[in-house]
Image (cartoon, rainbow, N blue to C red; front, side, top):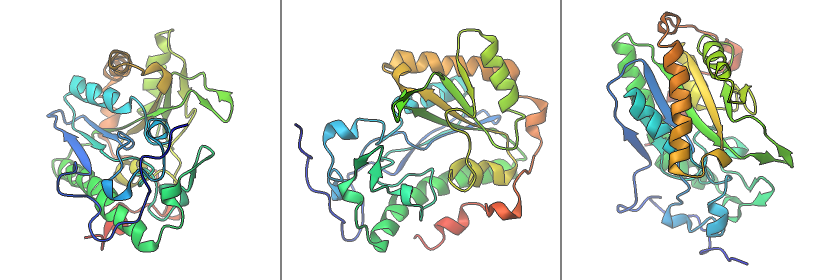
Length: 289
């Protein structure tokens, strides 16, 4: 039985060492009709946190990252010539698609596995992870979208994810799941385009939709701006090689470009209500310098 690589600990001072990768990567693109993010792109853990008390094998599983999602996102962004922002550290350190105070932002248990390095986290320990990883990623996305706002652009916001093929003993049949909430002007034609192929099992808000109040990235960046949005899940067992991931990226690319960019997507559609309490990322990153 594999042992943890080393003990998890809560560091003092700065979380990332100068020689460690920055908190996110950016792939530039000149197209103004599309904008991509990948919240769970990597399974890296900052050295200061050891391995969170997990084995290397455990950190390779779906609990630590969205397996294959980065390869899909990078290839799709390249095909669309679109900008892409992607995380460089594990969702177990801080989940960039969850609100910082949420229990599952730094989960003590994930898919029935205990995460020793996330037990008994202090408030300062949580804030340190938010300052180092969560805030820079979301500030960069916000800055890029603010620039698009200034240019009068309304790109389709694409959040790329992957999911395990079996959860809680249940097999997931969907090969691509298209998540959306309240605004289906992009989701409806893209789902129809994918289903028209006849060789892809497509989920409409299955296995996941966009959950306002739980999901962070799409509501706080896209829905606050009235942008058309898709939160796309690919089944991880279909992304086992680079070639497979790129093939599925091409499947989505074909569906997207068959129906868009659509004139309807260029309009702002504000579907949030005051009761949703979604007000943009400034309130979550303020004071995190």
